[in-house]
Image (cartoon, helix red, strand yellow):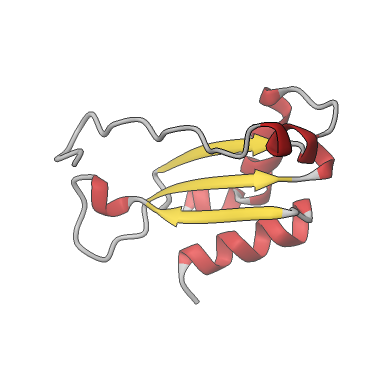
Amino acid sequence: MTVQQRIEIKLRDTLEPSHLEVINESHMHNVPKGSETHFKVVVVSAQFDGVSPVKRHQLVYGALADEMKSGVHALAITSRSPAEWSASPEANASPKCLGGNGK
């Protein structure tokens, strides 16, 4: 099972999202081809209703604690409640890589 698949499973099991995207952005960074080190996640969950952005990110990081300890270097997170996503269904832009080719 790939790291991307594990991330998808853990976020689905933990946050029960109505919308989930897990995008491997490793190719945008100075890492070997085929790496799974940099990801962007877009998570829309009713569990985020009334929850601060910091707490939302803590929930995502908590679900992915093992992955963050074992090879995932960076995680760009867009976390929205269903109402927020309905009003603005777009993800945050990922930051540019500061240490690599940053295509």
